[in-house]
Length: 183
Image 1 (cartoon, rainbow, N blue to C red):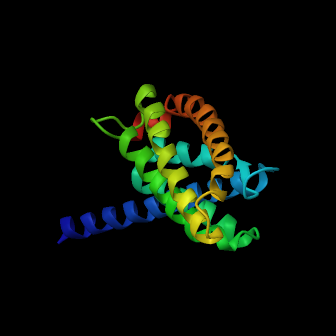
Image 2 (tube, rainbow, N blue to C red):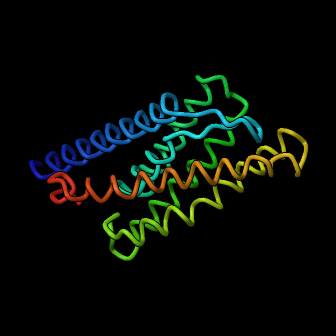
């Protein structure tokens, strides 16, 4: 009996810890999106924000599941609470997909976000997926396949800025005792 109870306790503790980490990551994505942003004067009025860098950091450091959830929840909540409600479904889908892609690639081949080249590749590969989902979402919203083209440069800028911030931050964080010990 003792062993079964110990295993149950460990499993429950791990699930609780995962929930807490995922919640913190989603909150960090939300804050980076809501409070560190610049409204674009072109396209469909999108934003350049640092939420993308937090999504990349979450996925690289903690893997595809937490990266997908952090991006979808954090940026989805921003859309819901920030006056962009119509964008929430598109954001949730695109950012979940982007976080999953980044995490899956960064954590492939036995790596756990510890290979800089793989991390850069992960972010770059995720960009067309994110842009495509937003393009399709905008095309549906605006009933036009031409209008969303104007938003692509802003999406690219946002992703490149996110990449340029996330990679060095991840490199530094991977050297901390927490990531050396746990990952």
